Image (cartoon, rainbow, N blue to C red; front, side, top):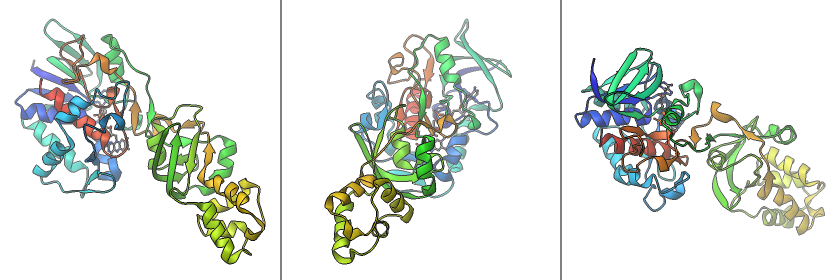
Length: 395
Ligand code: FDA
């Protein structure tokens, strides 16, 4: 029976990267996955072009851009294998990329190029076992035993890279959490993140006609406020602004949304009134905002008639419908569509430098299974690469 230096569980972003890096360092590894194809989330990410990192990520801002019980935990790995290191790796392979928005880097071509690159590195000395169900991990006489549908494998080290619970259709099972618990490691509460939010029937009845409308918005939740695009859907709200805030949102929280950020709709209406006060209120607002949104805002304000019939106070009241819209989502679309799982293996249980369990030497947890969740925009893949690289240095 082959004795491996390490068995890596999960051939997703973190597992593949870790296996490739360990193989480059001359280690004998095998990566196992129950899926038939490795790196499925890499392939479909970023609309097939993979937002593979974010070059605005720095040591200073990282604690803000990652959610975790300990937002400083990720710093060690993130500063040892940085976005610049990932860019250098991609450049060396001749994979072209471009910056889209706020430091977000995407490939010019297809995301599978990266999967192929990692597989080529891995196959130079390592192995991959696909379609392999992992049952349990236990400590044996010498190192670890991984019990699988294909038999028992043994290694001095095991790296758990099985991701979170997001998108079961793409292979997510939560196995990593069960392994952590079986070794006595604490889990933090898990919930869907980077996920569309849903409305109650009565809110949906009002907003459903707006489904498909996208526009820039400032979304605020408590003291947190961000400006990005927002999309009305048949279930509620989506778009980058909502996905981003969803990772912080808890049941019962209300959002305050400005659908015309950086503008003063009341003043713009007053300016139109000074020129053509005879037009209907909803026609005037329709000059400033999408028609259906303008119609809904007017209906919600309880105002009607001509623009000239209304003083500044009424215009401010109407503007508030779109610039200080208060809405209380009832839920999210859940793990079915969530891009990530917030929470996971508690960071206090792990060494920040190696991602090794403090109480179980030789057992590592990397990527999304750990309680480290990035913002939208390449931060989650960067965590997968950085944590994988950090673990690979000691395999
Ligand atoms: P990942 O989920 O990639 O891999 C886990 C692997 O473990 C899978 O291959 C799975 O099959 C396997 N596995 C699970 N349970 C198992 C079991 N019981 N037995 C055997 N194998 C098992 N991030 C970003 O930075 N930029 C982006 O553009 C995007 N885009 C994006 C789009 C979509 C649609 C999604 C769903 C997610 C993103 N993300 C993203 C997030 C990113 O994909 C995610 O953070 C990483 O893939 C996490 O990497 P991991 O390797 O930890 O888990």
